[in-house]
Length: 167
Image (tube, rainbow, N blue to C red):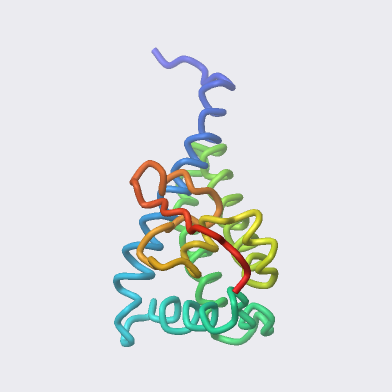
């Protein structure tokens, strides 16, 4: 009646996890951080009113990432959201360990890549041009992905910036 779960059955969780994480990244950035975040009364306003402001003023650099991690600021709110997302999928761990493990990895990787990009604008311009374009390009309502531009391509929201240079 029940067959033993094969290694191949569980390994599919890795690409599905990567695709899911990128889709969540796109949806969350567009609908939560930008739509809800425009309202100053929203918990999510830090993204639009602090992070985007800092980055535009400082040529993609966001010095808030240099602050100690124990202060409540845009970056610690970002970490809190990532930890909450990871906690939300934890009940699936016994049933889909590769999928959940990949989502955990993706949350960690998102923070690592996002932080590095805003501490090293030249690295970001070369390695995450879609994210650089989101902040420094003419349309902040495009280029929603941070780690990989997959869902921007799928959803038609990837808008490359011409003559991308450090501001």
